Length: 279
Image (cartoon, rainbow, N blue to C red; front, side, top):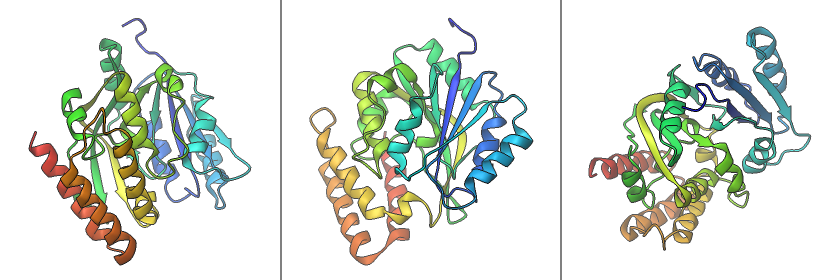
């Protein structure tokens, strides 16, 4: 390794995140990795998020790792993240959504070691615990680059809050495409895999919570529509599975007109488990 502890920049985008942000931020401060900068980007929250962040920094940031940045007007997730990604200075960038948490204190250490030793890999995630209305759901993710390329036209093969990117390629790709408001991470994963390899470590490093305030729960039909568009756009390099494509289209109509959100999410993770188990 050319540098035993290259700087890692952790970006936590937040909007009205007061109920969750402390858990997320403290989980980063518990990492054993020695060289981390934490950028929390508040997208003009209307609640007490900013006051909560200042209190957390005052009481817990003994190493002066946390930078609190905020916008005067709400820009939505992708624009908010792109604006502050330009502030990151680390060799690697990790993302943590405001309502998730890292549960493995060695997460960054293991990911940096892998990427330092495997220069042809530019994107690395991990396994996750999915909590749906308080109940854990089995939701395995593929681990190898070959498996990931095989399943990405069917399912999203990475958990956004688990990934570690190489920052130089992230900047080359112009970060997130802001035309996608609800599935911009899925689009970015496709673009990364066009340029280099990706993998998921077989460790459970995060908890991903489903609740009524998730983007997935508030804008389910819009997220499905964007996901389908992203799959169509990439079908020449990552051929579509048309059966699953039409199933998702049916899900879109069901969620949009019948409001079956709980049914859709449970089916989604059953399909994901089946896809991975078939590999």
